[in-house]
Structures are given as structure tokens and as C-alpha cells.
Length: 165
Image 1 (tube, one colour):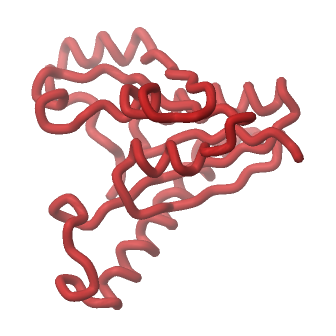
Image 2 (image 1 turned 90 degrees about the vertical axis):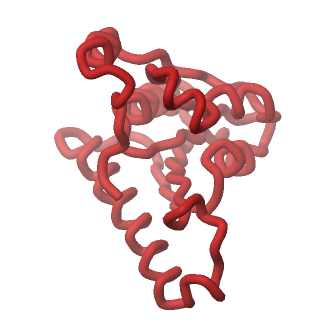
């Protein structure tokens, strides 16, 4: 069985850096690449069919799939990934979704470890930290690009904001 590299993507600069690093790792290891986008319902995903209805749930899932497709098309527009690539949009908390997707111990999980202001740390736990603590396989946390840190210093705690829905 071929080794599989799982990478979390959201559209943030850190996740796109992680996607490109995971692609390079997959090429080097002759492994398959699996891009995973975790999505939630508005309000943190606590609702279900009773709250949103099946049509709304389907629309949110389709929007997440389209967002993932757009991210991957944009990331590899100039040059394809050069490896077998699959993508999945999975409903759930990002850290838990990624850990479950990378459950095979022979693979690698790649996540972005982007800059986080104090407000983001207080509101949302770090996906990279969750993955490092819970994954059964090796985790590669890709540090932010130095330009991203400079931009965060200029924009303050509002950076990075996820791109797209």
C-alpha cells in the first residue's frame, strides 16, 4: 500500500504553504496526497437536520466542496501537483477531522502553523497544536512565511482571515 500524506487546507496563507510543502513531500516520498478541508455549519456546527434542514445541509456541503475545488485549482493552476491528488470536504472540527483522516501511522499529516494573534488564540484552539497532540502519525507543522508575519504585524489580530466561505 502506498504511503499517504494528508494536508489540511482552509484557504489561509498558512494552509496554502502547508499544501505546497505536502506536495513536495509526496513527490519526494512517491506518496499519494490527500487534501482535507474541514467545514462547519454557521454558529459552530452545533445544528443538524432539525435546525437547518437537509436542503441547507446539502448546500453547505456543496459550498465546502466547491471551495476546496477552487483552492486546489488555484494552488496548482500553473503546474499540476505531480502526484496522485484527492480532496475531501469533511464536516467537523478541523483538528479532529485531520487527525481522523491521517489515522494510518505510516503516513504524514501536514498542517500550517500560521501566525495567531491573542484574540484568535482565545477564541479558537490551534489546529496544529491539536494535531501534534492527537495524531497517531508524524505531523509536520509548516511555519508561516516571514512575509505573513510582517503582514500580521501591520494588520494586527485580524490576520490571517480565512479566504472564501
